[in-house]
Image (cartoon, one colour):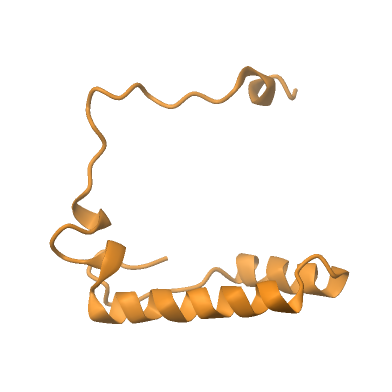
Length: 82
């Protein structure tokens, strides 16, 4: 989670806990664990630099969906889980 003004960020503990559990189970291997760490560092560098999707001019903060796009719908099989 990144604040809109890029003043703070936070990793969700739930995600880190699930990743650690996946490592214990052997589902997340060492290569994947390293790749996630490298991606985390790249994201932090972009936040600090105000670059990429965090850029003030042209990043995701100014992006808005096309008002003509239809609203997303869940697949019927997801709705019928009851």
